[in-house]
Length: 443
Image (cartoon, rainbow, N blue to C red; front, side):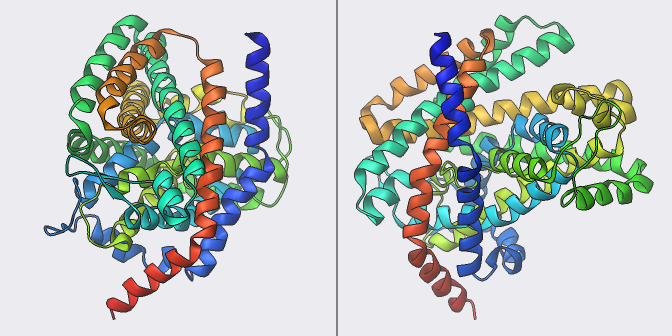
């Protein structure tokens, strides 16, 4: 088993090495160029479309519900611990590269959703199914690559979208509130079952309530802290921009970081946070009630904006206005201590509750991604079996140590990205043509 763990860790390191990060960001940059920077000038229009309802559109859930399901999966513990990890290992400059990853990732997320809606297929129960496995099969006639994507997604859903999230909730409640892990497991199992057994409509309805609440609550508390420290914000932004292009020396408990480290960890944490390029979010986009692929794609694009450029930025700024990031504090404790510095016990409670809600929402979002991948592999008649297995995985994850599962999940996420990025590059002309058609129709 130890040999297997070392092999998986090695393979994960290879898959998520510099070539993969260059491919992910490079694809986003290429799509940004052929779409003429659409994510910058079309963002206001995209934000308006979030609340637009298409009564005559085909699909199961609204634009808003599809966005909330995707946000549920991406706004997770990476927004709290992942940002802290990037700063700890890459210095303040990592935040700049996280932003850059988010900006080009908006073009990637948009492109994924265009293809997801364009090539989606009708299911037997009036619903739609779509995502990279379908645009690989029907857009590129590469069903084997589509099957490979589905297999990687189904496995990753049980890891990074299920057991690791349940484990994070169990561990923080155990350490901060002395709640037994099995109790957390039972509660999470029950709450997950209540929502996901109802399918995408149930998930969409619940996340439409939960996700706006949890994001607004976290951002509101973050803004209060930042308002209390307006005089320090200039210095925080100065650190981000200065050390994005310069090495930062060791000092205090901080070990120092090169410019290369800032880029590496900023890009890596940005990709893990917003999932642009992995091919997960377009699975939810395909269920949206719409007659136009571009309309839903614009809404999907705002997911990366909200996740990386809003939520992650709040966390980063609060960490950088505190002294703890220079004192060798572990990433898992860095965000907690930074909030507690300014809001005392209440700040710690906010981080605990946010971690619980962010992780739980990720479980719900990824349950749907895994379900559609499972359906692609085995057919619709096994969906109930998948949901039961997924619910059991929540209980298992809350009670185990999951270092191996983390590494294996990272590996599967990386393997998901490869066929998806191939599809985005080969179908880029379709994405460009659909976009041109839509924006010309608005003139």
